Length: 144
Length: 149
Image 1: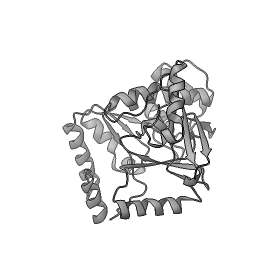
Image 2 (image 1 turned 180 degrees about the vertical axis):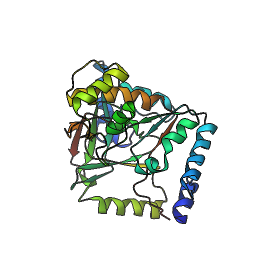
Image 3 (image 1 turned 90 degrees about the vertical axis):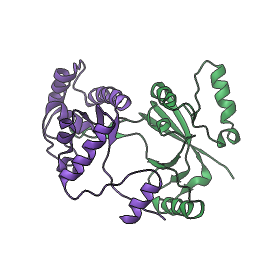
Image 4 (image 1 turned 60 degrees about the vertical axis):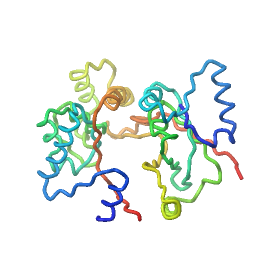
């Protein structure tokens, strides 16, 4: 961990060791404030779910957009995930179509291909206009 | 949208891009001085083209060393992505790729800030477990293997 941290710092990055969920959220909130970030795009991450990061980001006035298709569907509907890999498994395509049309004025069919294409176009705008991106880490490498 | 790669000349891509331009296509090579301009072009580009630095046979993965001449948007933003694969870059699997990256770090102390492993277009099964190809990244991915030395 120390080696990893040193190597990241040497390349101009920052590593923060948080003791608690609150510490982690506070550190991230401070970055958001410092950068005056309005929009944040976040990948699917169980750690951020566990520490309640989305709520912490909203507390400092930032809009958070989930980039994972399943998580994005749930976010539009303000619905919690039901499955760790496919979080929107409890919704059928008709329900997803309904969510998209109510929340985002979607006009096409309930075909999964058309729904996904719509999400792609919507999220692309978020990728291009966001101030901060957040992802989890699956694997770290601290080389010398 | 293509990388500004030193191999472009050797693989006759420079000529090819000029021909495309003559035929009325817009071609933009990643320009390290252009910052956000590269991304704006990549966002509306139909095709991204770059070289694979290490290619993994077992998983069909191209490894991209990202730096100021090879921006990450090239393989991510356009609708289609073409990877030029010099045959000599093909290794069995991730084992050899990590070894090569480790050696690069030890001998050259120069591992790029981002190493992308790209295994085809992005997939999702989030809607009723239906497999959909091409959700965020390119919808079409083509690998062109070129016999080199």
